[in-house]
Length: 95
Image (cartoon, helix red, strand yellow):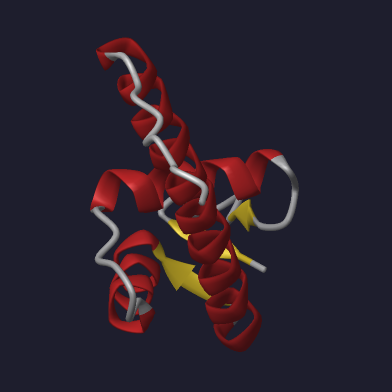
């Protein structure tokens, strides 16, 4: 007969594990937001920030992204050259 003894974690180890899980969840969310942004921009070609954020919030079924996260993801995609700002109107994004 085999007896299993539960593995006890210290408070610091539990905190580290929680942070690792949190980072994985956030990475999955950012990938999902990026995919939604690209999908919306592919369909619409030109949108203002408000329009794009509204579409992302409407499309999100598993979690509700906040405005700041959406803005950071848009900036990241612009830096990676997946999309760009309109040269004449910096409030509009182009595919």
